[in-house]
Amino acid sequence: MTEEFSKDNLGSRAEEYLESIVCKNLEMCVEVLQQCENLLPLADELKIVSRCIDAIASKACAEQIASSFSRLEYSSSGRLHMNRQAKCDGDWWIEDLSVIRIDLYQRVMTAMKCRGVRPESIGASLVNYAQKELTKKSSLWNPSGHTKIDLFSTDHERLVVETIVSLLPVEKLAVPITFLFGLLRSAVMLDCSIACRLDLERRIGSQLDIATLDDLLIPSFRHAGDTLFDVDTVQRILVNFSQQDDSEDDMDDASVFESDSPHSPSQGALFKVSKLVDNYLAEIAPDANLKLAKFMAIAETLPTHARTIHDGLYRAIDIYLKAHQGLPDADKKKLCKLIDFQKLSQEAGAHAAQNERLPLQSIVQVLYFEQLRLRNALCCSYADDDRKPVNHQSWRISSSALSAAMSPKDNYASLRRENRELKLELARMRMRLNDLEKEHVCMKRDMAKSSSRKFMSSFTKKIGGLSLFGHSSSRGSSSPSRQSYRTDSKVIERTCASTD
Image (cartoon, one colour):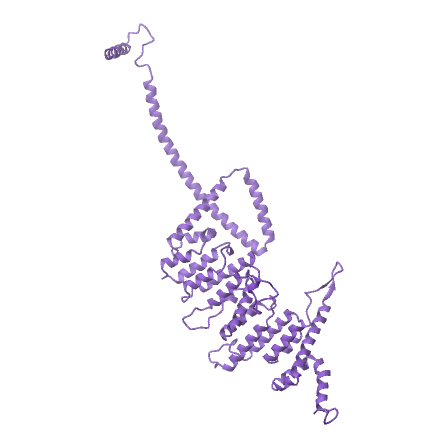
């Protein structure tokens, strides 16, 4: 078929066809790659596969550049910028590439990365390929009790998952986090390599603040005596989230995000993840096979300043204590040490004070902090009256500023919470007022008793100070009483003289 035997032989004509027709069209390149799947490694030796892959990557990159130019527009200030809201039409090739085999698809994606195709386009192609390849013939996404286990299908799915994970862009948010959790579930079920699962856990941990509770509920595919959900995997994800402040010198692995240097999570991210973890703990707490050590390990993964309110953690621990009633008292005390009772809201504190499942030491702590809160409220209520209008006005200004910064839903929830707190505070003030009235009545009684005693003593002193034994001022009085007074005084004088 070469030119040695005939001019314009089949070899030169095939070469010209590939160069002028096939490589100019992306769909025809994909068709040629499909035909070459059964002709490997011969098609690879003839450079047919590599030429088609280079043509696909070049065509996709050119389409992306053209699409980017079409989205350029001038702003009101006269500057040229890209309209990100406009629809990107340069990714039409994503659907075409989902039909080729996984090994050829990997080579195409690698070539596209080298050509500079956008990470979002690469991620969208990976999501589309995984959805089609893993759902069309697998018991992984369509489980059935009557389906026989196909070992070849399982091996193929494991290869697809590991390949897609190795092709994931290093940039964050290039693929949805739900897709990463789906890959992680598949990797756990198919028993993929440890490197594959650890890479997914690191990627998920770097953006855990946008995950949901359903994402974390990864089923456990082990023996029957294990927990219902995979707790160990979630714990490793939380450790990756908490350790984002590691130095870049320790991040030499190529699978770790190279473009985004690791940073410590912000307080907002910590607050979101703390609420997520508390909800997750409440979800797994009723599991009878969940050991106390695993439950506490997940609760202690986040730093202490991550939780500003401990209501969610208290609710999860209460559910765990209710489901594990045979827990020893020592373990109950160890578990309740995770709660900072000073960070409980008034509703949660009132519930904890009457919770018989808590140890006595914890209940005493709750009552102590409730007493402190009541004392502080009373001190604030008995403050200077001149400061009350100013404080009230400043409170109004700060609350209005906060409500303006919040969404209507959060604003309504905060108003309801403040209303409940005010009602509880009013009820406590009424109780305290009744106590003060009772004390006032008791003080009146004591004062009445003490005043009567003082009156009798002063009365006797006044009686004794009168001139009953003195000389009379009236002369010539011949009344018997006055004569008796005089005789008594004389007797007293004589007695005093004799004693002297």
